Amino acid sequence: GIRSAITFRENVSLETLVDLYRTAACYVVSSDEEGLGLTILEAMACGRPVVSTRCGGPSTVVEEGNTGRLVPTGASAALADAVRDMLARPDTANQMGRAGRSRIENAFSVDVSKQRFLEGYDALLQNAN
Image (cartoon, rainbow, N blue to C red; front, side, top):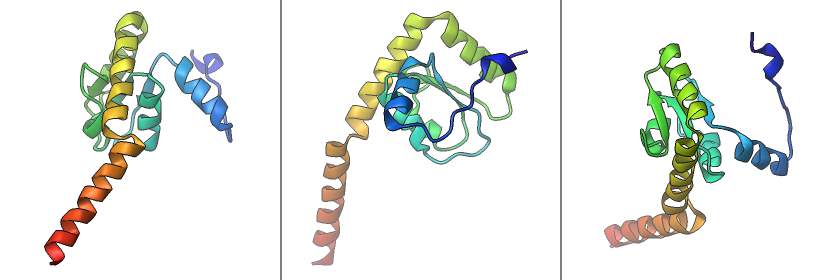
């Protein structure tokens, strides 16, 4: 009974995509297997909490209870409960979204990534000598 509430979008502009992230109650990933998906980082950068299955990559960035919720793969009822919890507690969801934004800034920003690359190159150069 939710078909009328679902809209599929294709080839949206970056501006529209950011607006969709920012206005979402939460971002949901229901994969059985997933690497570190860029969309999870994008949603967190836009200040939205993530509800995901523990399917690999999401578990490396989503902090259970802090930046979102993690549930076992194949546990559709647990996934639905976690989403329902986000919808029922918007203040908590917004707090998780802010924590997620902070996590992205501190761990995945251009400056942080650049510094990690430089440190890696320095270590390689030191080991080469």
